[in-house]
Length: 356
Ligand SMILES: NC(=O)c1ccc[n+]([C@@H]2O[C@H](COP(=O)([O-])OP(=O)(O)OC[C@H]3O[C@@H](n4cnc5c(N)ncnc54)[C@H](O)[C@@H]3O)[C@@H](O)[C@H]2O)c1
Ligand SMILES: [Zn+2]
Image (tube, rainbow, N blue to C red; front, side):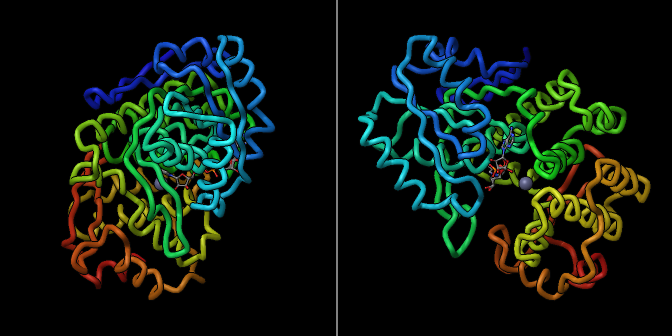
């Protein structure tokens, strides 16, 4: 078993990473919440795979628990789903002392967190992330929220869970594209924060891809630790937290220009490769370091080239309208070396064009 503490004063909580923890969550609830009745929130897919086990574990510990589900997919991460789930909670008689349990990927975590933040002005919630992206990224840090037609994640709240329980074995049923969505974030942590971790990824690639659970558990722990460290230092997205956007500036523009046909992980991989090239052209990063970054991305079956059919002008326009653009300036997170990044807007349009 591995644990990571997210240090946020009185809102601190623990992330517990352990094989088959899903069957032991029930026994641990008393330590993290005073609640007695629980509402398990899951999308239809994950509910079909794992809800029964988690429900059994919570019931066995003597708690009351109900399952509430919604249809899977980003298109359902919206206010209508929040309203439908809130109605179900109200009809079941959920009150201020109830606790939500998010069982699923990032969509479920974001929805459940926001529901917990707003139902009766805030009730406890717990995360049991089931996608690699949720285990290494979205379940840590307390950002919750939903999409509106005008944009992704535009409605939301910072709201921390009481605990996060991660079962690496649960990833065995995850489709490969979804696994790679998480791997892109894993590579990101190596580049922005930890050179040794990056080297370990180079060495352990095949054991990661073959889902060796001990290797996965250790990898997930280090990612949670890095994100927790960044978030503890900067909970509400000041300067430091922006390092987590490495690969996401151009990545988001590519995703949007592809009308979200390109998966998040693939887009972030292209974005990280582009940022590495930008860093070389701006004189921040040595060529060999950029090569190592590209090689690792490719070794994990992720792309480094933005498909030629995507309109470069459109990508450029998306860059300018990005949420994180300040006063018309696009801020890039650029590596200075593997393990260390800077944030800069000092990148000429000509260099951006060249890289695109
Ligand atoms: N809050 C944050 O800080 C943060 C950070 C990054 C991303 N996000 C959000 O996370 C979302 C993406 O998360 P995601 O990639 O996990 O998507 P997701 O929740 O839609 O999960 C992807 C798919 O995999 C399925 N799935 C999940 N776990 C499974 C398992 N163990 N076995 C089989 N199938 C499984 C789901 O049913 C879904 O169809 C986006 O909405 C994004 O905005 C939030
Ligand atoms: Zn991401």
